[in-house]
Image (cartoon, rainbow, N blue to C red; front, side):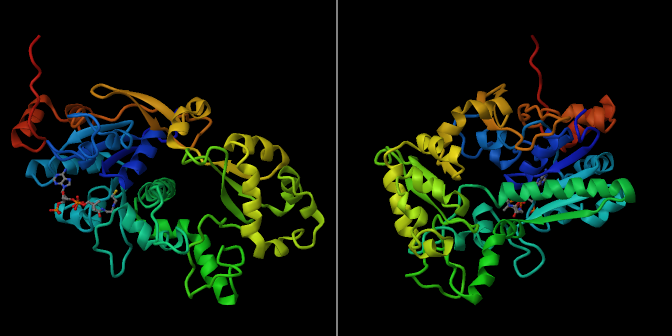
Length: 423
Ligand code: COA
């Protein structure tokens, strides 16, 4: 049995943040009903298309295992259908711009009145405060949540990271909030509101930088590349590739770096593994030299130390560096390209990278469920076509008769009826 079997989700999400949340819930077995605007659908169906007239990878990779119903929530009949959906589902998930759902007539108060057991889960850019009315996308959240100001090199501008920590990160938070509220409902019998703000989600992931902000009041951040020759201002500076933990680390070049942009490896000079690292790079004399033997002695010399390590890593490819350092417990990691990840057999074996077949696009790769449950394995199925399950949901979930469904089609609430050509 799937962990969330029996839980039905009214999925009013679009773009990336909300869909990542409901996709996770679907992977754990929830019945996710994605409500989309007739004829249009989630905007990402058409964004960054690689093939003409086919749902984009952007959409297909964020909406697996869901069903799609088209419904105009501003149409009178559409509102009645939506009310019935609210009464039939356990959770409503949305990431509209602030106030959009209220304007549709489905405020928390109204939904709670219609279905007191319903959990009403929202992603917004900001929590209550001066920016609560703003529309927000990924990179805005990265900037407003502290990630951009602390990412990059000291002599360069703030940088955005490729990991979608604002969107997919907040989707994870919301999914966690929803299952927690479902657990609470088991005892209380009541639904509640769940809010995950993207700024809060990014800041949560930048926790160590708020730690460093407070350490800064008591002296320089000795593991940062600015120490000992650079200067510190009154805010945490960008630390390049320095480790966020107590163990200094850096990205060093490996064999082939002149032509391969990913011929690099991250190496950590963990105190416990220092002698092993010295032996591996041919600097045995550093093991007992008081100038290098202790963590404190090494801190002002990190630049020179990593340059020396790099002289050695440049003689080996990144996998040889791993093969040499891992057995002697020196933490290190190769910089893997998307191409290498896509082709990695072990990720295919665990279902972290999956191949999915789609009726109009054909086969494509996607990232599967990153969380594995031993009794509730995830199977990734394709994303729905726009409105593919409209009639099925009206009939099987909402209990409308054939005559009523005809009337709903006629009202324009669910879009244009697709006529099936006679054989
Ligand atoms: N039927 C009828 N109308 C519908 C509908 C449906 N099925 N689905 C959506 N709409 C309407 C909404 O009611 C809204 O109308 P209104 O402005 O008249 O109230 C309109 O479509 C647009 O919705 P909105 O959410 O404002 O979309 P947008 O494209 O302007 O903004 C975001 C997109 C992502 C910026 C915005 O939704 C947002 O800030 N969301 C919260 C933060 C977030 O999740 N950001 C990350 C996105 S990856």
